[in-house]
Amino acid sequence: MKKSIYSKIYQRLFSIINMYSLNIEHYPMPKDLMYSLKEMNTDILLKLKYQYGDEIDQEKYEILLNRLLHSQNEIGYVITNNEQEICGYFHLVKDEMKSGGLGKKLKLSHDIVVLFDDYTFLKHRGKGVHKYSILARINKAREMGFTKANVLIHEGNTPSERAYLAFDFQKTIRYKVLKIKKYKFVFIKRLENEY
Image (cartoon, rainbow, N blue to C red; front, side, top):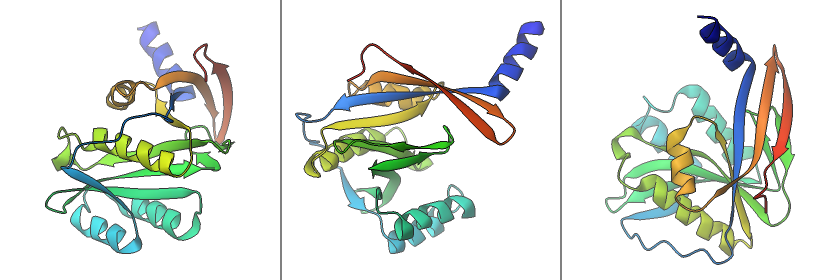
């Protein structure tokens, strides 16, 4: 019983976020022609809201819209299938990113891009959409001149961890986040396989 109380308190106070990294200079191109990557715009976002309103609430819609209208460093994409049906949305960020989980901004080096906010709509899960999104964004980042891709994943998000590990992403940094009221204190542990 004491362990479960301790565990609950620990989980309320701490969260673990891991950074995974991949050298993308010579990564192979996606060959899956079932899907295509398109840059998001306000028309596509509005379509998403009406088509998938049960999965995109008003708050998420406003976050995505704000990125489109006010961010120069966050780029949104959608994946469509052969029937031009939107299967999910996915993002890249360059230069600087605000991490809600860490409660701070991360300054990125000129050769690093971060893959973030991956979401495959429920009816399209298990069909290779997320896998394609990772490959397509790696390729897009390489075309933009980046040589390294990072992703932040909350520990315990097993589907995301598996997806990125399947592409040889390596865990490079472990962030332990202590939450006290509205404040977050971040403890950083750099791992041996850091690039």
